[in-house]
Image (cartoon, rainbow, N blue to C red; front, side):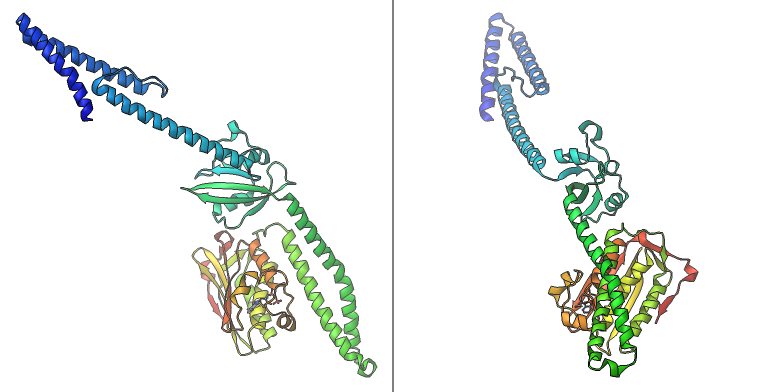
Length: 441
Ligand code: ADP
């Protein structure tokens, strides 16, 4: 910096000396000095003008000729411009690499702004969602995917689980949509074609449903005959076969329960998400579940029920009954005689919750994540002995999913278990306040 000022002084000093000498020679030093410094001032103004014009010119324009301090300012500015050019080139390369890699992704990828408008997408998204660069930039994603379930999923903002929807251009294609939030309210939407997987899943479901259906009739016939034989009352004729018949009856009974549960599961899987027109009086429903649980217990357990009578749900009553009674029967079956079971139906803010707590045998933590899998049991012998099919919690999981909820399980071996679920606001309905009362049984 000092060096620059020295350079400038080397210009100013000679001007001053020459001006003074010339002035003394013509006897008017003030006039010559003033004229020379006016010229020097005009030169400075010209340099400022050139610098200003250069700053406004395109980045590639040549710098103006300058000496002294202006030369140094222009040098610095030119160096800064060069650094900015290099940075831009580098960012350009990174962006091109990013575009190339996201284009190479096998999934449709769309970047959404905080209002759900599409900012950028890759080639697969162009094909799968039928996007057009000019027409669709900044359009809302719900205009492109006008699916009501997708809309609700987007509004709810809970993106832990992916969503399966038909492709907007061709509903024979199944898409699995995943949304990843990032930055300030932005989202990355990924849609994967899972048509093949979906077809295989449909084949599997149909197979299970068909086998279960085909087995139901012969099983009913066999079970009916066995019942007739056992109840014919002629024990002397049955003789040693009596025990065999009783065993066969138990086994066909068990098979019938498995077939019924399998059919229920395939019904739950194949139907669309539960519609919410039916208003379910959960407090009343739980009352009858409690009575059935008391029958199963045979008076060996204390079974409590606490409900908010005005709190209802939009959903399918038969499905909810099946879910709640599976949970209640499990609580009874896995709690030794003398234990207690407590069911609770209550509001939590604008949501509704159901919980069932027992002080039974409890579950080791490693089993908890797998309990809702079909036929997964902690203790197969115990489950069979108590009349379990291994499908109860799988049914519960499906029913809850169809009603916008998930099953939460907390348990401690030897101390008991707590099964609970929360229903979202849009499923909840309140009847008039004067009808409200708290029921404790
Ligand atoms: P199951 O017909 O065998 O009861 P479920 O799907 O209903 O099948 O339950 C799966 C397994 O979860 C059961 O076999 C049991 O080991 C465990 N389980 C379910 N509920 C309870 C409970 N309340 N207490 C302890 N274990 C439970």
